[in-house]
Image (cartoon, rainbow, N blue to C red; front, side):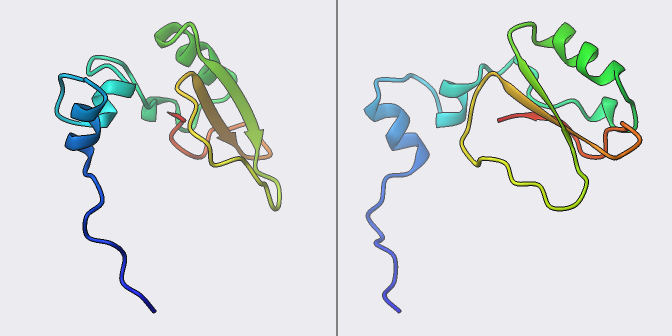
Length: 98
């Protein structure tokens, strides 16, 4: 099996190449003071979406019931928050932007 190339750009050089004045590409995508996860809603039910919308009004909050096998896309969306709940409507995983 061939080894991966060693000359790939790192996050800092990518940010610099985009003309960004910051240390990492994450800072370019999400401001440092922005809330990106909501661990405090784990165990809650319908209050979870309301809490997330208070913190991030422009969020598209998707409630996903984990009952059996669930497939979600792996793309990153800076205004999407997925909330995974069990069959009793309780949040079972820390919701986060993505």
